[in-house]
Image (cartoon, rainbow over all chains, first blue to last red; front, side, top):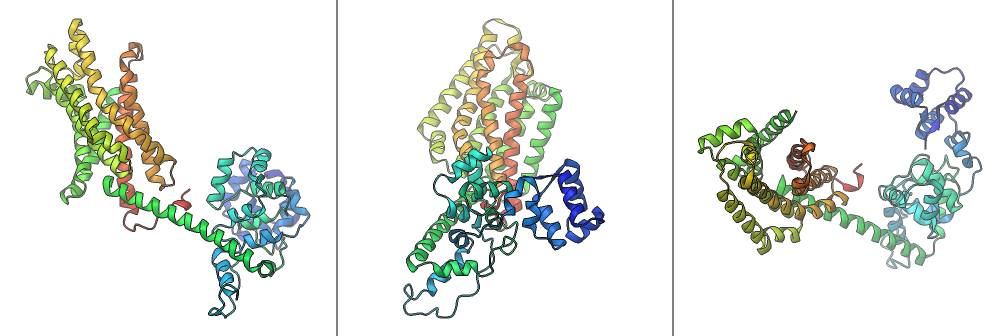
Length: 244
Length: 245
């Protein structure tokens, strides 16, 4: 999950040989107290390395790859089509459906849909895992990392995934190690080596049927989430009405 | 130690009751004010000094203890009704206000009064300690009387418990789940009071600690829901459960 402080210091020496901790914090925008605390505890957050790499113009993925726990990131693997599509937000996907002439023969939405919004989106983590899941994935991740399946699912529902788990998930699914880090928003698509129009190309390559079914799945999931939120809100209001 | 716990619980409960006065005057959720007011009175009556003072004024035959039991019944029934309705526990609500609930309340109340009348209850002291110290039949009757007094709160808590556990595991906002957790702990503590007769006397303060854990959990839990409403209630759609940490 975190990186050892010693390895971090060694890495920092490599990219900013003469910079003081204060300089590093100023340039990367990390709070000094935060970094100091991480160093004292001997556990440096992955996000810290990412911020510092960006500040010094180093690719965060290759920076992370220099640490033992993340060396799988060293070999860049192109993302699969499923992964690319999973990183398209639901509204973008729905717009793409409406732009297909088979779906809307009248062509009322003939104007080109706007460019895809950048990853990550509101359900990107869950969609990513679902895209690469062969049915046994969660089980394998849990066996490999020792994280209980329900804790793993809870993270996905909250659209979160620790970097360690994200990489472990990629490995267990046999896809590129950086995909999960894109889905969690830790690194950008470009930093992961995804071509700029890769998601658009993947979207265009989907047949009408595939795209529509996928959008349907997303809508159904969205509907479920909204229903649950409304139900919770109703219940909260009732509690407040009776006990507030 | 026990005295500090008692007086500070009284202070906390009195403060919360006092803080509810303005909204009670506006007519908002009067029941909640009464819950806190009754709980304050109940705590007052379970502390030795105020108990003796009040009981002496009432004739010195521990009538204040009987009052205390019914104050507790009223408070716990109000809590039960409000909580089951708030948390949507329809089954629990029916178990409290339906025929079964009313039968349970009537049977326990009548046995409580009958036992009280059978006891020679001279000698004011909180928890009728002086009566049971005299030994003999009275001591035994005081034991039964105490058990009857604990039975109804335990019944209500057991009815509340499943709904509270469900709420803790739900995706409701964090303050509400915390409150439900506190209410659940309080309910368990009240249910444990049923086992007081088998607690060895050497565990002296155990009974006090369990009692006051229950009271404090209920007060803090209910106050927390109220505080959460004051904090978030203004705009109903602001809290999104999925982003709760």
